[in-house]
Length: 92
Image (cartoon, rainbow, N blue to C red; front, side):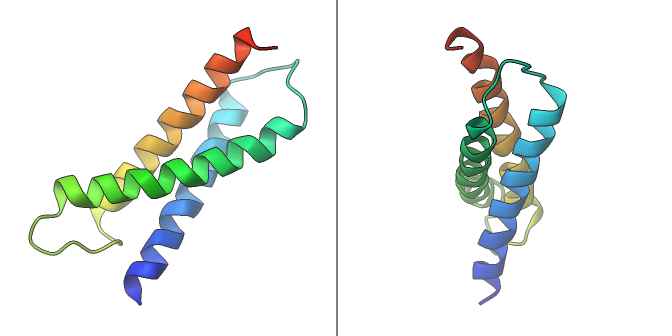
């Protein structure tokens, strides 16, 4: 049961990372729908990053609520959100 909670924490971390990137990378011409897309992308990236972090850094006891999982979720959530905010510049 603790792993399900850990995956939920990864998703929340990914969404929070996406909102931080939204606040840092200003896009005055962005439409309101980008916030929803950014939150979904951040949650997805947080889940994938958490899985990768646990797989890479936690060899002996692969638990979702570990430093590798949390760090991977944070890193990939920030990275995917930054790529989206930076790359959308050419589309608007």
